[in-house]
Length: 291
Length: 122
Image 1 (cartoon, chains in turn yellow, purple):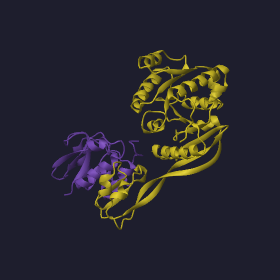
Image 2 (tube, rainbow over the protein chains, first blue to last red; image 1 turned 120 degrees about the vertical axis):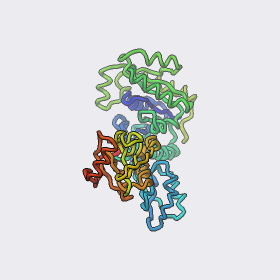
Image 3 (cartoon, rainbow over the protein chains, first blue to last red; image 1 turned 135 degrees about the horizontal axis):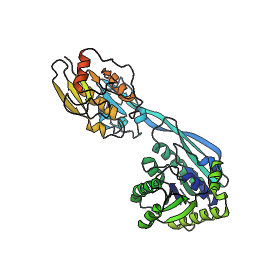
Image 4 (cartoon, helix red, strand yellow; image 1 turned 60 degrees about the vertical axis):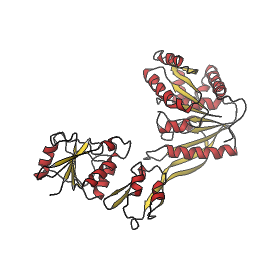
């Protein structure tokens, strides 16, 4: 089974929860950091990286001598990655989503496939857990294409070594966040009991609801703020699977890149309970993910 | 006389010049001598998540304008306008379209060699 650890608001504790969950997961498991713009799960799991590869995307390259400026490519492109201005064909590779449509419609065969580097994929293991992450190239504006490359690599790793999957998702509710949770069996929404936490939790629930997946909430920094998050969860029947108290010891552990499940037996028990609730929500009793 | 384009917040010469290029409300296409003009709406560019500047540049190129008076132009839009041979005057703000055209007529605008924005309105 796959579980995605997501949130609307950034900084609520997705990585804290992901790392702790991995540490208590009592079946074969692979950790995947899909927050490719700012990956940080490795800081806590401290994996041994055994392999890496560059990921790229197909972008058009023009042979200007063949171009008749017919605009077929420019009219097709929804992202303004290719344009004809007067008698000049202009390509903006950084705008390209790699659909290949311009190459397909060009009647003069003036376009050929080139590459734009998206970033790097790294994999290895963290103790008994498998580990996989994507790191976006600095300057790259799109993360879903790299996320798709990371997910393809995940399929390959799972075929070699079946395991459950814990995905550390990017924050927000736009394309990257949706891309990270769309293949999961269960979505965990990490929030905090503050007005910001509540507002973004509402957005996240709304964004992910059409995916029709079981969702549950982890309330981090329980004890700060107010009770409105609890009231909201009750009113929409969103189960609260565990709470992480607002506690100086936890903040200290985090600042030293330690896994918070190791702070106390009580916290560890809380994450083991979370793992059970996730598996119950997935309806999983025994099978690990076979890609 | 060749026509020039001015980014505008509205459809007349007395509307405020819109300092944004890619996400300008629209463009006044005007003959500086006769002041005959027409308004080109830029709503389609405003609605885009990305590529507003490139789309706006396409509108300007299609309009036949030889020069553009505006506030801020991003790098991709600037590249597109330059490729089509359109002269660009930037840093105009806090004036009406008519005032910008007057400046152009009296030679008080400078043609830019580089864009003055990083893209995405920054």
